[in-house]
Image (cartoon, rainbow, N blue to C red; front, side):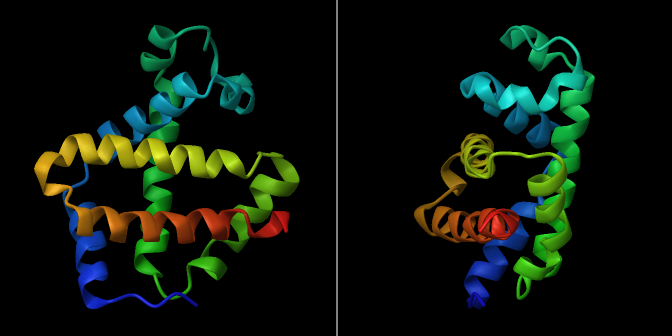
Length: 147
């Protein structure tokens, strides 16, 4: 079990309280698919993903990015039990979708970049430490069924 300080909880809650799910979700997933093109293989049913422009304009990608961010709400609401909170989702991604678990880390990195760019100077070192800790716990929980 991960121990969270009151400060870390406040930082994570603060990030989510100001989050534009549609904008940040879309930008994060698009960035991941563009920067790491091999991740596109999991989105074959999402239409044309042949170049950055088509990815950026794809409404299915935008919707899935939003869905991913709303999925992080579950971790936020269950910070003391993220591993069990994501057990079903981990099983889905490992057994049914066969997603390479390293892709969770890549998406988390892209999400961090997008949030840092959005927050600007407010994305302090302490903010990054708490955010990276939160995402690392989520990524570990999502990859749990692979071990």
